[in-house]
Length: 475
Image (cartoon, rainbow, N blue to C red):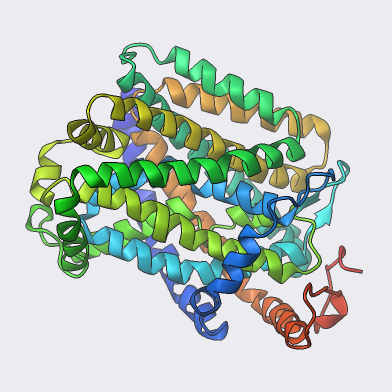
């Protein structure tokens, strides 16, 4: 691994910086444009989006198809991962407390992008041999723009980004937290085997098993993490006001310890925010497409709410746990980042049991994310070739990546790899979404028209689009 860290990681890091310069323009520029065009629905209609997201708990229990609520939970399972613990802590260390503020801003902007891509994924979804729906950037690029080559590019990028990069980061961070808590620093093989074995059991049962698992586990674990954070914050309650003070104070002026580079604060907030909520990457669009629903906009609204929950709620609680510990200098002095920083802070405040609790959260969050990323990888593998032998190969690769990454003791190479393809995927996806945005606006207008007419559950027909070319599942 020394060779990889010294020679390969810097190459990926340089490539990531270049691609993120491009991705920044598309993610922020188009996200703002979508927000204005949609009249700020992610905020002004949050009551509607939250109600839709949380009202379908019993959906899908008596059918083999994936329900809207199950798709929401798979998406949240992918979002709520180690990025909500390790990613937030790393953002604070690398970009200062102000990075949290920019994570909030980019989440609000990205929520509009998530609505756009998720709705598109529903419009251009298609049913495969296993009876389930699949979609995402590859599908709406091929069917909406008529470009199979662009679709294949998007599919390959997504598998590299999530099936390898993100899964590797999740498994490595979870293994690090577990080995640190249980004194297995010199041998992570036990945890690598556990992660791979649990993944195999779920993945080989198929997409519906993944959906059921996510709908049962994700809401409970998200709520449990918030409760744990509240308890941890109570031990340093005197530092809460200072925590929010540092976030706003450093949002427009980087701390002296960072050399006062405000650009680092903003870019760090964007990178870690996107890593956590995945808005604009096309990843959750793959999940959104699996839902069996009467109107594409319904899943778009639900997934836009998921972005806000992930960043404005879950990530914020983690940030307050870290920042209420003391000043930025005190946090940097610990010379830690990621989950190890959160473990050290909570252990100092709550006692030794905290590191075991966080290790457990890291394991479960990494696993739920892994399951979500597999769903995305399968959707794109089926786009390239809808063959069960190909799907078997994808399952094996995902499990092997999780196992190998969990054994690795340095996450640097996985971070650099995922950041590079993350930015590339965002750039490609946002361009495709922009080119097909008219279809989303037309679908949204149709949804609102039916709502104004008193229709409780609007139904979509492709005739409501000015051009329904490539739309096959909405007869």
